[in-house]
Image (cartoon, rainbow, N blue to C red):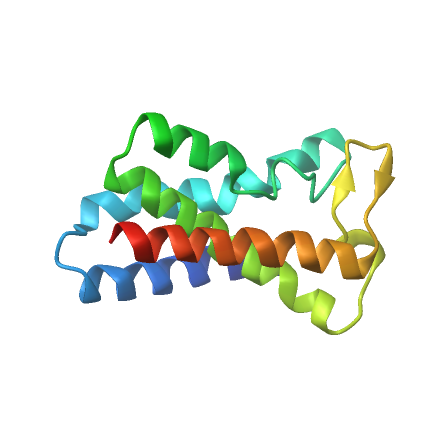
Length: 132
């Protein structure tokens, strides 16, 4: 999915969450929308797109653990939304550029890239459900 697709998807899903959960305010969803779209693709500058760290919720869970505020939880969900958008091309058996990169040393194949994204997606959604 391209930047525009990620951005529009982030907006739609965050607005749905805002409508469902009364503890989420509009001001809380602004920063996760932008950073959830930009952070995973920041690795494009390093010629290492879909880097295993940038396409993971691990750094965000660490931040949320030390600063457990709703905005950081929503940031995890915005990364999850981005990862779902990146997982969809793998379902069509597209490899190469869609695969997770291991710091320019190697790439996971399509199957293991999908597993990595899937585990991150399930973990992020589970955390959101447990906390909310």
